[in-house]
Image 1 (spheres, rainbow, N blue to C red):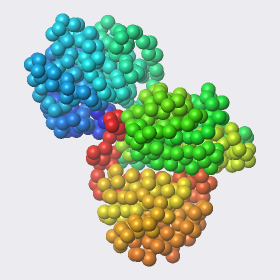
Image 2 (image 1 turned 45 degrees about the vertical axis):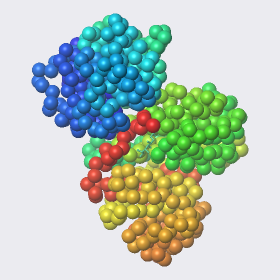
Image 3 (image 1 turned 90 degrees about the horizontal axis):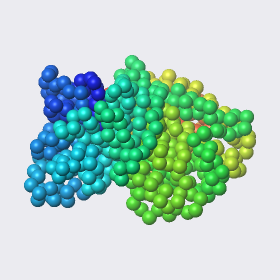
Image 4 (image 1 turned 120 degrees about the vertical axis):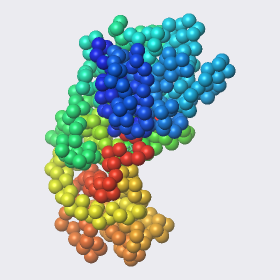
Amino acid sequence: MCGIVGYIGKNNAVPILLDGLRSLEYRGYDSAGVYVQGVGCIKSVGVIDNLEAKIPNEYNGVAGIGHTRWATHGEPSEHNAHPQSDESGRVFVVHNGIIENYREISQLLTEEGHTFSSETDTEVIAHLVEKFLNDGKNFKDAVVEMLKCIKGAYGIAVACKDKPDELIVARMGSPLVIGLSLDEYFIASDPSALLRHTRDIIYLNDGDIAVVGSAGHRVFTLKEENVDRKISRIDWDFETVKKDGYAHFMLKEIMEAPTVIENSMRGRLLVEQGSVKLGGIQDISEDLRSIKNVVIVGCGSAYYAGLVGRMMIEELAGIPTVVELGSEFRYKKSVIEPRTLVIAVSQSGETADTLEAVREAKRKGALTIGIVNTIGSTIARETNAGVYNHAGPEVSVASTKAFISQLVVFALLATFLGRQRDLSLMAGKQIVTEIANLPEKIMRILSSREDIKEIALRFSHYQNFFFIGRKYNYPIAMEGSLKLKEISYIHAEGCGAGELKHGSIALITPDFPTMAICLQDSVYEKMISNVQEINARKGPIVIMTSEDTDVSFLTSDVIRIPHVHEILSPILSVIPLQLFAYYCSVARGLDVDRPRNLAKSVTVE
Ligand code: AGP
């Protein structure tokens, strides 16, 4: 996704803007640019180094804005890069999101004599502000008038040559934060971009406008009503997100899984009561007791986590549960019965499709909770309550540790809901005890990662792959295929093992391998017969099974994981698939952490 940075204070803005943009590189981008008050605007295609190389040494100003662009309107190019400006170079703007009515606006402005130089939707913002400045309005009022004209999602930062001691930002549907320090302000679309400078952050809400500069800061609405946004203190430091000696963030984050699970369950297990304590939903616990059905919404890996969560909730709490793609839920006729709980799952807490699904659910009267990793993110703030993953910042585009923590939170939530209903003390104790033992079992899997690497090296040349599983591990087959696709670019398909014979098995050949999840669980025998169907057609097979289970009669490529309660097995079984995808990507010499075409947080539709 695009990244926004801004600075106004007493130091040279150039190094601060470049440092901030580099912190946002992981989000994915194809061009970048900066505007520095009193100096000028520089833009470049490609990486930030290209931009830095173009900035003259004498560039030295105490205010500016910067942007990394992930193209949505107009191809990656210098003229489409941000900051965008009006033709006189009086107003500069950086923007995340989509201006839905930009064509109509540019048409009107063109008729008034404006000339446009880019294919972006963003450029209309600069021209509108210039128009209102020419109408005699001051900088702030010109920006307010502009905001009344545009429709769509935006996080924007605006600078104006006439007002070098002010920057103005506005947020509607795309995250934006303000960092505060002594006599200086930092602006960013993601707190990680300003953590080297300050940990005191204001999270703007949708509809917020803020002026920052020598006169201090003010947050207000389009109606010019001041709003009081509290200053949050960020407790994690981007420095800790360094790779810690691993080759890639992705491997580092997979290896963090035991710690992540410990953090996700810290202070939440009530073993003696066979239950859990989830502070973020305590205030609505009585509402949860009367919930009659559940709708889980998410996208990508979060959606697959939801498919696991559904089975956990139905198994432990007996509440009918469905899972919807955020991008589908928000447009379909969603039937929200009374006493429905909608659970939004999102690592970033900013995924546009999931956020709009939450808003749609709230419009229909649903109680909403978020399972979110990013503290203070929009979904976390717009849902009625929620449970944070506490997985820490996830940098690699492919979600790994956050996905695992989502499954743990679902297990905790399902146990909580179950113990409000028919789940017995003994059954609750068993689940909670098993959750407590997960970190040690995951460490055993991670210690065998070299075996997984060897298998990956033998299979990384294939162009196609099936992933099959049943019941709790059907969603993991889907997630395993997504991991392989998104970082190794191998075409992979997740499939319910029982579904193969209904058509997909036609694809099986010696060139089309299958990863089969065959744990010692209630569907083990069924899985083995599915694998035999594949064997009969000479399809290469990798079997993931439980320790001390002999499958040598089917294949020599075997991954073993510790025995675990079937309900919790996805938390273990996904890890070898994450490692398998990682090693395939490395074997193919690809950019594991920043795969082509992808972004870490999809804040556009
Ligand atoms: C995960 O590997 C993918 N990069 C992607 O599917 C991601 O899970 C999806 O975009 C949802 O993101 P969120 O969890 O931040 O909402």
